[in-house]
Image 1 (tube, rainbow, N blue to C red):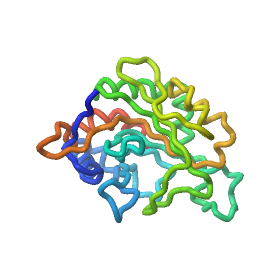
Image 2: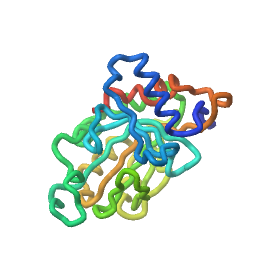
Image 3: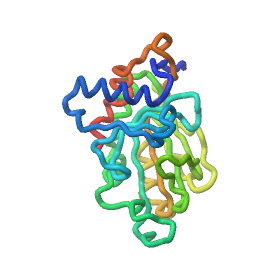
Image 4: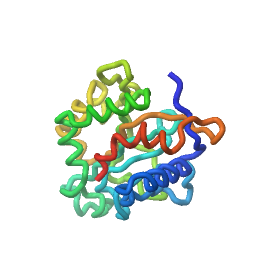
Length: 243
């Protein structure tokens, strides 16, 4: 299956264009702000559309445009949320207070909604609009290796599931081999949420979770998806999940 080709050669050009498009089109989008993970190297940094000016914005869920860590030549656009460290790690020498997950983090709502099947209609809508497989990616970092803005860091481990447009469930695309092996057998977002909720060992890990589609980088002349198409087909179905 060929990927839709965007009109953007980098993440920063895509993210800024999408923000300009939605601010011009949807008054409610005035509260969204585009932020790069690394503003010193913004071209292929992760970019987020964040509901507010908080920074770091750990507690918020976000819209995301980034490079795929599995296929680095492809853009990965969709929904993003993150889990901080358990409160039992408070006061450890290498654990900053901002890394401790509080009650106001969106992660809690994500788990509730995902366990109840609330994400399934959104995924179906993304598939319907884009015609692309949806990929669910989980990356984990140990409590003493949490990535900091401006500093590149590779996850300790990742696992990726894929939902094809013609399929009813997810298949394993990139298997895990250590801490994330329980996710190798997940076939739904609900399964993933159940694993995240019940696995106590994850309290020692920072978790990044992405759900989205892959796109091809392109140019104004080679691409077919401009900002409007990226927004409409990949990001807009997740807009009510940003908070």
